[in-house]
Figure (cartoon, rainbow, N blue to C red):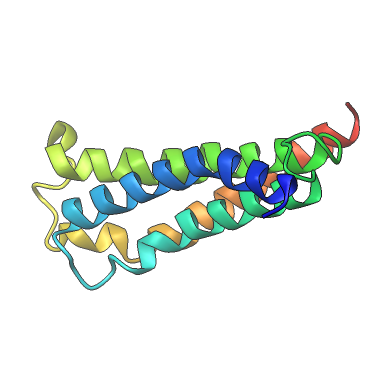
Amino acid sequence: MSARHKFIVLRLLPVLLLCLAAGFWFVEVQQGGPWAARNLVPLGVLVGLSLLTLHKGAGHWTGAGMRMPLGTLGFAIPALGLAAYLHYAYAINLNGMFSDAAFPDRVFRFLPAYTLVAGGIGFAIGWIVGRNV
């Protein structure tokens, strides 16, 4: 294994562990449910973007400039943040948000689309900012 690949694995490990922990928690909050696998897609996209960033940077986050790292961070903040917030709100029924709903678990049906769109917008903003740095 080359030094480049060792750096990629080493630097990708925290992202992978965070996404695995979030994924297990998402599935637990949804109690399996019909949309549990669908809600893991944004986490997979985040791992993929991180891997691509590290690959382009030869094992370093900023090895190929700031576009990809800031774009990846711009994707992660809204995508992971929105998904984590809604799972947390559902888990504790934040302010009775889900108690009066007929089908409260349906919030997870379209959540991956919302998080991917929000993450895409964040990625674009990070990409533009990284271009100007």
